[in-house]
Length: 500
Image (cartoon, rainbow, N blue to C red; front, side):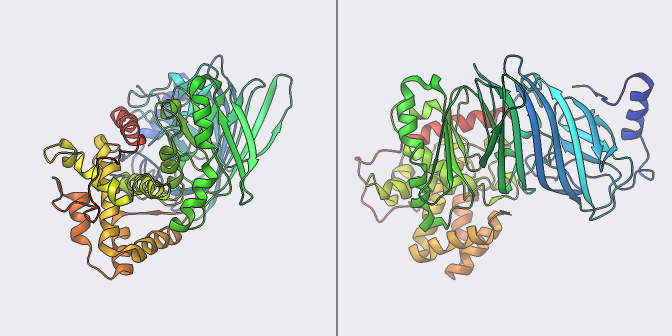
């Protein structure tokens, strides 16, 4: 996509281009970096500032797919800034920095980078308020040839991984910059607007429209912030622990609707089951949404979203356990880099093993051995390295399955007491932050007192099928079937990987 200037036309726009992209380095000594240098997505995130809070106030017209409103960003500079970037792809009407109108334009080489030049350069360690006003048709916005925003029959879904924010709010779009959120969306009365956290209230200020106001009080990464707008049956209750529990179901689920409810409505039970293994649930609310037109499930913070495909064969507790486990592994403790994706998916997949053992549908040993045996040694599966799969294989089945086998190999190597201490300690120390594989290995060695480099090197970073099978202590049995969610999760996340 060509360069787009949004501060004016003709001579004004030409002058803006010159200021932003041709001024000498000496005249602009300290611009913020346009990306954080993530090895998989170098342009993701932005240098020079940290965001503390996003206040997103929007109006959405489903029939036209028209999204309009304002995002207010509260941030702190990490360096002196003559200009800075926001990750955003929609058309911008205006930008103000600390109440002063600012110049802005889209980077001609990257339509997802909004370059902002404040009226006055920003000092280091300065609180900054950025207000971006915008309006656009998100489904028509393509970045790298891909549109993450999904229209549905009655609304839209802003749900995706690794990037979705660019299609609905300007941000510092990398997991290492977490923030709190207020999300307020006005929609026609006959549809709902669902997001993360707690529903603070619903308000009306004009006929035919209702505003849904959501608040997330715990640090949250940008790709886990979501919108689901449409004709949903919304249920509100309270968990046994006293937290708001909000679920929503698309009537278009049809025959899958009862199975979806029978699964998702048990989410608080799953959370209670996981807490002894992982520690206290890290957030202020719980819930889930079953919808159509998504094609996958995603662990949006406090409220995972599931495609109807997971419930076509009946209840599916495995996928609910998987996404619930992500509230700890991936949501509370985020990735430092996207190459560490196995820390999300390996542990979420392993939680399915724990649940299976809990309900008497196969021990973790049995499931691990079955999974290991299900891939022949010459299968290309063993050539994908979960510890660094590459962006093209970021959601490959090896990240999930070999990642889970890595977790089980660790459990066998150090014993249950050390293993679960490692998990709880990792989640406690890193809560609300992010971590790396190297840090996890160091912690595992610290707690177990064992040298584990070879174990992790073999299971995460070495091509080929490891010779030592996990679950060797358990007798093989053909009666143990593979949990039904595996294949669906693999397939849908593989599709995601091919888009980005």
